[in-house]
Image 1 (cartoon, rainbow, N blue to C red):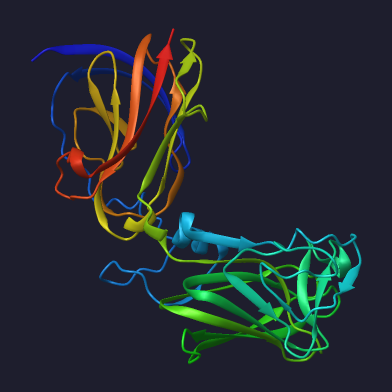
Image 2 (cartoon, one colour; image 1 turned 120 degrees about the vertical axis):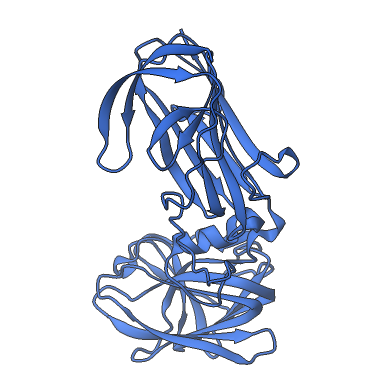
Length: 356
């Protein structure tokens, strides 16, 4: 079997990171055993039960919500209303959706999909820096209760809640289904420094409304960055691979540093099993990234087998000294977890690197 001696100087950025100068006499076409379930791709920031499916309940943080919803997310950030920094505007409305005109502004102050009801109070829009608030926000004034209704039920939602600086208090969040039946509730403490407390919920049967109320002050919790939607929204997995931060072909001089990063939005396939492939077509032969060792090894074999979770950016190469030539790095997932490359079920991305 033909062998080729090549020099690689690779700085691996896994763990603490270390530098290796490796003279490798490598076979052109061996099949290496595929590492399986080593855990480095299994960051899994989303709740998954033992069967690999999503679970109902509270969402820990905004990153988890974003991973669940992907391209299906809609966010009202309340930035479109003109209110001066450091000031509030107690408006002339107690209800708002995408059609509402508030004090002569609008429509389109919020997205089509959710409405905001101040009940017996009025909607107040707060300017940035009003009592320490980081951005424009809204609340129900003279009424401690605020209700968010969804035009159609959503599978997940999340919102940042604040207290005014110097006025810490507890807030209660209640979740209701599409028929108005109570689902769950949570009490959170809003700190005195006006920093955000994220509250999110996932409910596969559909959330119809969310009720927020303050327990000790006569206004609702301050609301910011309300995100909602349906998981995946029919989206396909989107693998991404970049060389030196670029999607397009990259040219580097011999001896210059090269970094290759991968990321994945699992879309509608979140939590489903798949073969993960990280490969490189070099001037010498095919190589694959070994997740178990953190090394590039010769041959075509699967990098990892397991559930699709959002990852990235995850560095698979960071070093200098690649021999002159053209390299194509690939990252893909195929939905038939059998250790074979199933082109018909493959979602992939590639980037070309030219070393001159």
